[in-house]
Length: 78
Image (cartoon, rainbow, N blue to C red; front, side, top):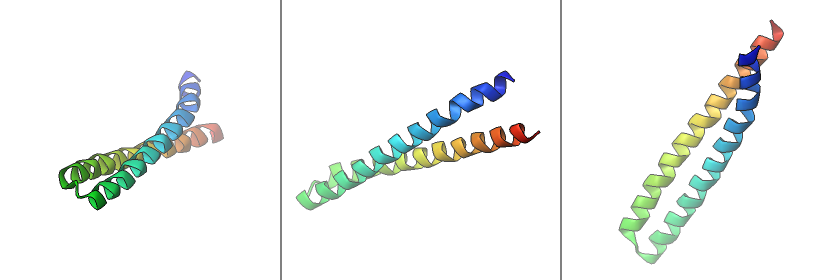
């Protein structure tokens, strides 16, 4: 029973964290486009690298939250 309660508390946290990280990555990607317009090549490439890394981690967090949700639903049915 304790595992189920932990999963119930963990799912919204993972979902919220994944959305926040995704919004941050989108902001950095838009910021990188602005740097490209101004001619800051190095800064733009570094910002793109960080933005794509955060995008990848946010997708991983969102996928993890769906796994937690699916196992919670499966254990509720049993």
